[in-house]
Length: 513
Image (tube, rainbow, N blue to C red):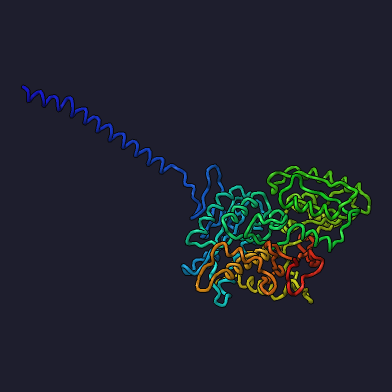
């Protein structure tokens, strides 16, 4: 009887509930596993390519790519295949990495053209460095860094670049930095805080430069293009702008590029009898907005000025510049000829299909280009540049139609972007190799940026855009500024070279104290 009781107790009181509990636990585990599996399967894959992701809440692929990933830009594919082939040909441990920082996911046509040309110039300089170096080391691998169409994801991308600087990729410089915006400024500040040298190809804003107020907020930053102030000084020496003959039209509230251009132009026409005319574009200045209506009104006011007024200084981005030119084409005072003078954003108009070319029949649009293919081809070539350096780039371009260099896609030099990007990469290579100690295949990271004050005299970089002689703050001294005129066919006609100092630098190319 007692044995039966214990059997009953074990089976009814312990084992049956225990089996039930085990069954419940097993069921729960199976359900949890199924839920986890479903979540894993259904969870959205945010990766785009190695090193490139879509961040939460965004469809843009941002980060740093070292493969042939095209960021959704079919126009880049041929070129990226050539870059990938060059990168994969390099032996492990023989190279350092340079990243090109650009808005690779841009959607407006003008900016995509800019990115293509910058990438072409950067790659040609990489290829030249690796194949025409006469044994110099290290070799150069090229990476693509995308901070978003508007630069809004700069923090993520800069973080990724900082990781590459510490890792086996041996990132030693970042070049490009094409647009002078607040996001760009934040990215440059953070990169240089990490000790990463930065070479700006086409940034011209004065507040994205060192030494402007006796301080260096971006230690390790070098620039290939002149500041807006230097461009304005060169423009003034060419055009002989006077206060009584010019009206200023400017972007309000502006961005780093337009604000510093406005200040530079304002100094040129101090004492003008006319108050400057502002316009307010969209926050994304690549968008049309409603500024076309404002420009129509400004053309009425322009026609109200005295007949002695024949020059308009325009401090704005390229979309608004095109709108303004189109509005001037319909102005009431067609019997008066005007000249629009502006900064290097004018170069975008050569590829702008929305430009009303009929507006140029009685209107001259001239701008300070970053570079132009005809700047150093005429004899006699002034000091400050060389026909041989232009010929070296042209030779690379001829090789770029097919393997092993290319194909690199359709080439256009008139906007200057390919040329200036080529020079920026050459400056990066110069700094890297000068900083590499004997017996090593890579330089210490921060030593690259320490080379910039010595890039002058016989140590200058002979760029296709002109001599690159840097002052102690990393800014180009008396850099050649091509003055370019937009033709009725939408082409960029070279007019002449102007100089911030009013004359070319001496053959020594040594900045004064």
